Length: 216
Image 1 (cartoon, helix red, strand yellow):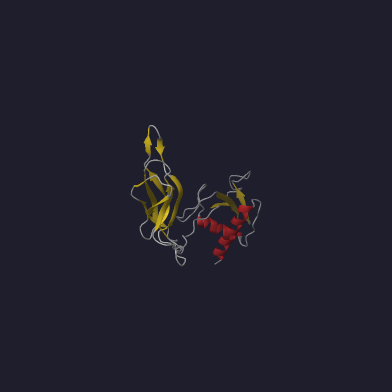
Image 2 (cartoon, rainbow, N blue to C red):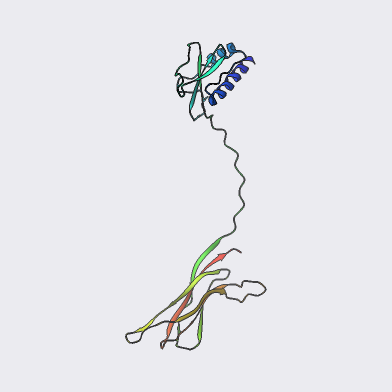
């Protein structure tokens, strides 16, 4: 019991002088502490006793004087060796061995469903003759999917005399294929293009849409 107490006193002294190189510790029973230190056979210079554990950080050195004091060495402008052969040198690391791994944390909550099932759909090419009225064409998404993007493709009609003829697009938007009722968004969705042909030639045109499943 007394030897354990002596070891504890030396350990406390080591902690104190790690912060203050001028600290002097007066053990209650220096003779017992000195015997215990010699019995433990301190590690050689530059090494520390780790009992197989991996220890990191700077190595700190000190000497125990059996007359009743502990002092630091090998730091700053201090001496490299103990002041007397009767003094017992010992060392320790600034950092102790790593502790055991902590317990695994709890699983996180499931994330919200994302977007999936991307696909591109197209309407067939249709020919639209010159007219003073607006045409409307659609690209329908499969049931359950929403139109995230879309547009149109037209086949230009060109001649060396009159140049190229192109449709005049008024609207290009996504919309429910079924008009919303009772707050429903309608399903399936489609991409709608409204346009006019103010040229003198027939214009082939088709609509396309990018569709996917989207969680609400």
